[in-house]
Each structure stands twice: as C-alpha cells, then as structure tokens.
Image (cartoon, rainbow, N blue to C red):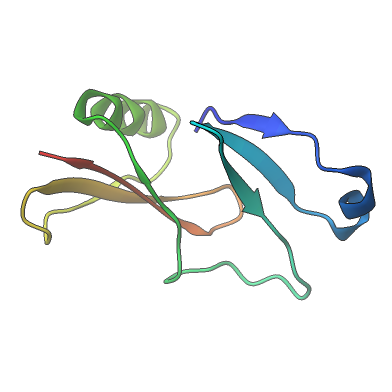
Amino acid sequence: MGLEELEKPEPLRSRGGVWFALGGGHQLHVGVEEPFAPAGKAHPAFRLAADELDELAKRLEAAGERVEWDDSLPGVRRFYTADPWGNRIELLAAT
C-alpha cells in the first residue's frame, strides 16, 4: 500500500509487529499473535481520494492481488483486498 514503516521504540521491538506512518500525524500499529490466524472479517478501513482509490485498485490488480468491489453503501466506492498474510483490508472513497 506504499506506507512508510516507522521504527518501533526499543522497549517494544521484542513484541513483534510493525508500525506505519499514515500522514497527518496518524500511525497504524499492526501486531502479531501466536498461533496466527488471518482476520477474515475484522479489518481496518482506509479512506482515500477517489482517484487514489482507482489507482490503488489498478496497481493491486496489476500485481495479481484480489480486488473485490462492494457497492452496498450508497455514496461510497469501496473494495476489499488482503495483506500478504491473508488479513482483510478495506479501501474506500466518498463519491
């Protein structure tokens, strides 16, 4: 998704996981647990500008990744994909 990885503080590194910068001072922290099971229903959602949403969908499809469009919310364009470990990710834009 092109997110910048942030260095975790030293005391937290041994716990695993990864942190990303989202812009505007926001961060995304992704943790891990054993045994691992991908989240198929629970998921983060990221709002993008409409042109960015379309561009990201094209890039994912070109890379051979699944892009599943969902038109069930009026006034919202969105699709689901999965991260490399099988976790569900929602990407959306207002129309």
